Length: 210
Image (cartoon, rainbow, N blue to C red):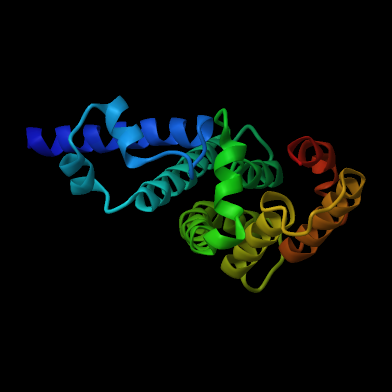
C-alpha cells in the first residue's frame, strides 16, 4: 500500500514540474530530460508512468479540468448565492486560474494539437455536465428554468462558451467582445428557458475574462 501511495506522489511530482516547464520554457522546448533533471528520477521511472511527453500534457489537461470542476462544486454548494448566479459562476470557474495558464491553453488550441483540444472538451463535458445537472434540475423545480432537455442544454452552453471565449477560434478584435458576450448570455437565457435579462449582470464579469 505504501508503494502505491509513493507512486501517486511521484507521478504528481512529474506533472507539477512538467507544467511549470511547459509554462516557463514552452512545451516544444521542454524535453523529457529537462523534467528528469528537476524531479531527479531515472528515465525508466518516467516511462513507467508516462509513455511520452504528450501523455504528460494530456494528464495536465485532465488535472486542469478537475481543478475547474472542484471550483464549480464549491460554488454550487453555496446556497447563499442565488441559483442562477451559482450556475453561471460555476461555468465561468472553468477558466484556469494558475499563473501561466494562457501558455497551456495556447498549446491545447494549436491546430496541430486537435487531439488535445478534443481531449479537453470530452473531459470537460463528462466532468462538468453532472456537476451542473443537479442545480439546473433544482431551477426547473423552482420554475426558474423551462427546458425539455436539461443535460443537452448544459452541454450546449458549455460548448458554446468554450468555442466563443476559450479557444480564440474566431480571432475577434477586442472591441467585438462586449457584443459577443451579450449574445452568449442572451442565448444562454433562451436555452435555460429563463426570463429575458436574467443573466445581464454577468456581462461585466465575462468581459473581464475575455
